[in-house]
Length: 349
Image 1 (cartoon, rainbow, N blue to C red):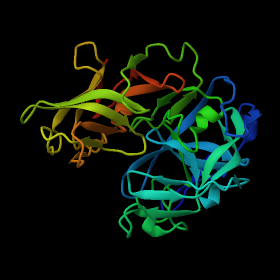
Image 2 (image 1 turned 45 degrees about the vertical axis):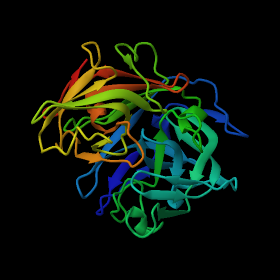
Image 3 (image 1 turned 90 degrees about the horizontal axis):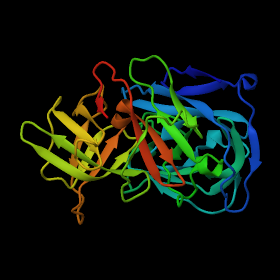
Image 4 (image 1 turned 90 degrees about the vertical axis):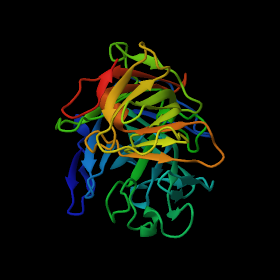
């Protein structure tokens, strides 16, 4: 498949060369979209794209009804959700679905069934057939103000910029629609994002083998699927620490700390340390700088009324220092340190 960047910054798929692709393993999944059998190993390229406002986004190629589509890669949600221009062959089940996102956008449309291909897997699975968008709190305070015709997923409210779909791969088996990888018979996957300045795509490894998984360390799971227990430290200008459930999210650049009065707003370039699990010498982590554009660490401190426990939103940054291995069956995550890049966060395995 090849891609074209349009004048507005949208990247669109224009050609699919099936002869160069591995054979698809066809499978039909009926009823409640039960998981298929485990399939062979496959690699899918992760593209790094930039919106006109400078925001970095990540996407992978899939097929919908045999048609190529580039969809935003989101490890912070679950389910495949497709806008009207990417719904080839979808058949609605009539079951209504309204999916809210942290940006304030709500995607509206029924659960549908369609032939979806990712890597070497292809099956009829459950997806959301998005027919409309609105803002969660009403009014026009989110990207949904553009209307369904100009709205694009992960487009930051820029008309026509972003993607025609979002593939949420958080290992949440209760999501509606369910995780598309699990529906396709993919139960383990490794996310290796492209690093800034590398000039190369990243890799999404599906059903990795033992060699692929060498060097990974499992990290403590958080309260909810796709979360880990972690701590964020800041040594200066005064020591501060926030520990709790942490969400890693390729679809939401930036770092946020919820309900952490000891961790106020930070000046640009303030040093910090992130640690998976308990803060001891054996825990993997990374050093970083807050409010650093290259490290994608725009920082915000947020209070959530009625909640006292600290929560961390770590965004993309951990993926710049670590490869992340997801195991949907066990609900676990594991990490493997990556070489650092100039100006990037540094893994401390």
